[in-house]
Length: 285
Image 1 (cartoon, rainbow, N blue to C red):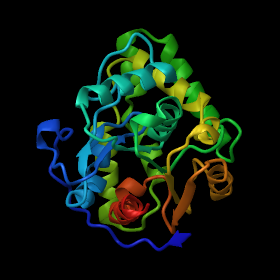
Image 2: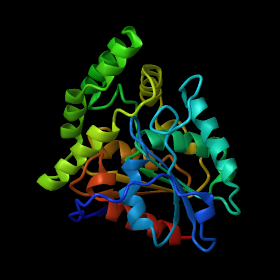
Image 3: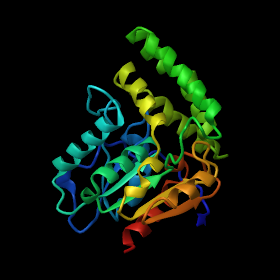
């Protein structure tokens, strides 16, 4: 199903950290949101804003980024076990809905496969549905691999400067933003400039990148028993629609919604529409 996008507001929401357990309302479902690679919880605040009246939202920072935990290593197993411990600490009375965006979709899918009873439903926004090195954007992926490999060979302080280089962040931002709204594009670039380099160390971002291109949601889809909603952008350069249609067929209980005229940044460009799709999914049996 394809849905039309609407022009989102460019007004920035109030920055806040994850909703604390003490703030939960028992009558509402809880959604735990996992952000993408190099991001922080700030990237998902617009979606959270539009879900405010219908769900309790918890958005932790992934390990290695923002205020996230520090891990001995940043492989997929370590991310999954961190998420499991985080979920256990929340002491949920009923299983929450788990949502992941981009790299967060890989972490969330891997978690759902290993701990299916810990969640009620799964939402994957702009899921990484195919191997990054085999996709249509593989040239850019290989350039990114080279960029991170150079960073890995540099001394720590120099590596951090190299990996946080503003021109590189801007090129990424300009490439992925599909909107023609100048105000919204400015907002997106500002968000990336402000939050895209809040990684803890060269190790965390280098190992995290390796993890992000070494796995995809398709690796876990067939063994995920919970109802799963995939939300894709029709112009996504990371995982094209053909791969998304193939991906959803792997899920025992999967459904795919496609938002037109948007790419990999649905959380910035069409957050209200993403929220509406999630709300409808929450109400479904």
